[in-house]
Image 1 (cartoon, protein in one colour):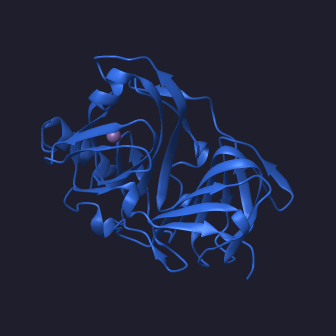
Image 2: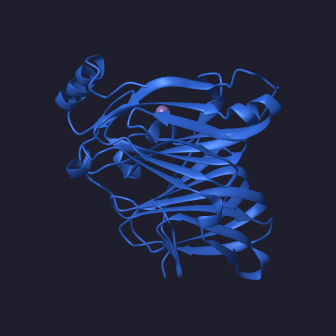
Image 3: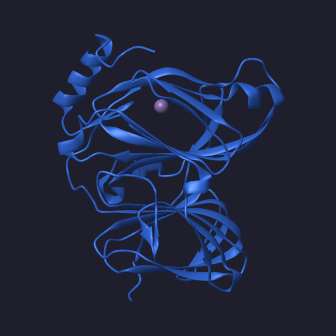
Length: 287
Ligand code: MN
């Protein structure tokens, strides 16, 4: 096996609020919406924040999406979702919501009403996965992926645990249905552990360090940074220098033009103008 080279270690900006519910740090920073990370677009990580009890759940109200998928992974607390395609759901710790915006929808994302009444710690990550040109107008779809349905792989020598949300790790197949080959692995590593992760040659790979710290190829990588690897090579070897919470995101690059404006991700500026127009005319539905 040959290691994928580190292209860069992405320094991330300070966190900002999304609505009043999620204090997020954009972990792909200036690499967001670029081909180096295709098919991924961006990743917001909301580190643990303690919320006081409230009868008004914090979150973000109705807004559109078109041309890609949002993947929400909850670590602490509960998140509720409702969209104009008629889907709704509540996910808690370890659960994942994989929403295909496709042809366009409106949705809202809040802390759950019950959890909000109790108050407590909320932390989550939201990943945006691009759709290939041929599937930009796929009908909206909603996959609730509960913790219990996600395969857990114990890593050798007590190194930690890897949950396969999408793609395949060894014999474990992730439950998420995807439009293109994508690996989304949720990894906990124990301090001192070293693991080698096999990844397909030719795929992009990015390793956000949500919590803890790593050493890769002699480079130290602290929390809230993301390691971007090159397409060559078929594995990465990482050592945890502190207990670590990671995501490994790998995938076949789409290598198609990316036109991006706010919540719309298409291939051309004309398609972006059309999406804005469709949204204004109410063609993406109502909540
Ligand atoms: Mn959204």
